[in-house]
Image 1 (cartoon, rainbow, N blue to C red):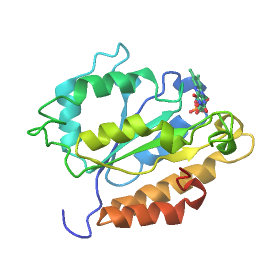
Image 2: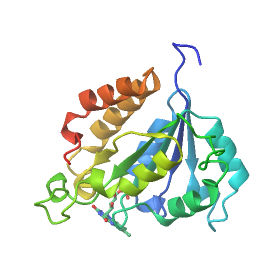
Image 3: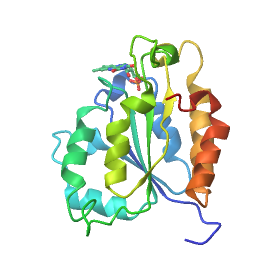
Length: 204
Ligand SMILES: Cc1cc2nc3c(=O)[nH]c(=O)nc-3n(C[C@H](O)[C@H](O)[C@H](O)COP(=O)(O)O)c2cc1C
């Protein structure tokens, strides 16, 4: 990749009830319009969860930044993303001493959560921060030789529409993704994230 080229982004969207979505589908549609971004709607492509492993691995090979875009469901992702991980991230492809296909790629979750930000703290009713709850994704990315970036989160998502917070969130995510695409190094990427989304800084 030349120095000025944008990093390519693969967005794997998981939302089982798109007609009920207020946040993630609108966000996905907006991100799909960006340069060098590929959007895959997993539930639309695989309504019976029969994932085409070869196609998914090929898509991964072709992109620099891998994004899981999803609502937080039971402190994790909707089921198809688990199935996708179980099938696509094969030994010898994604992990193991010869499984280097994903080495050096960047990975992040873009999430909406029904709970408020203050609930995702040690003193809050969810007890753990989002960063702590995302550890299985972090470790999966790490085992697959990828660099994990902090999640971009919209808290209190069910009141976001009435409070007119969705459009500003979409604009923030777009700006952040655009900065990541032009970040040359991992430390640049972390710097962009902490600059653009200071309110979402990791509080571990
Ligand atoms: C099955 C299910 C599980 C959920 N689990 C959580 C959860 O663990 N934590 C949370 O903050 N919100 C949870 N929510 C709320 C969703 O995260 C919220 O409705 C969603 O982020 C809104 O995005 P959308 O408008 O794109 O659907 C859950 C919702 C559903 C339907």
